[in-house]
Image (tube, rainbow, N blue to C red; front, side, top):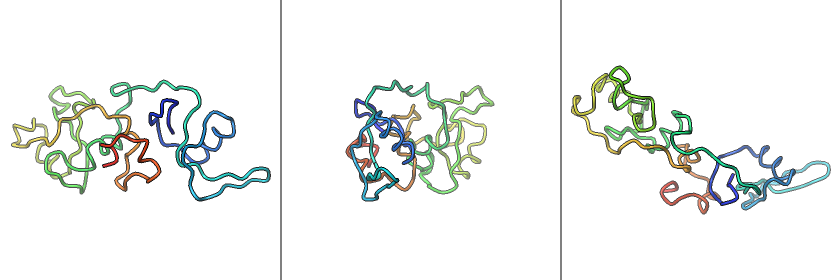
Length: 163
């Protein structure tokens, strides 16, 4: 779902998209090959819709931290060793040492690295972060699957989100 400004907002179900279309609150930008039929109407399954009126959405810190989005932001790999297996979340500055539960302090970590680091700071454990934690971009909220992005979405997402 895109805002009136063509900015990605979120991923919604086909049912929600159809309801928005039927109420006249959205328009279809990309449609699939599947058809939906009812007694009175037939339409193609929408893949990308755009709202007709602008919706203000919260940014970065205002959005609640979630495991799914942290994993997407960190490209589904451990920020210490690069592994893609047994992923967990790690507080860079441990909560026991005053670290916050915020976008800037939480990274993706594999279980072995998380155990190795324990309640120490990365430099104390002899570990280096591959990238600095940051608030997620709007695309991070959309591209939260390790299976990639549907082809029809590519023109509407930032280049770094699709890569």
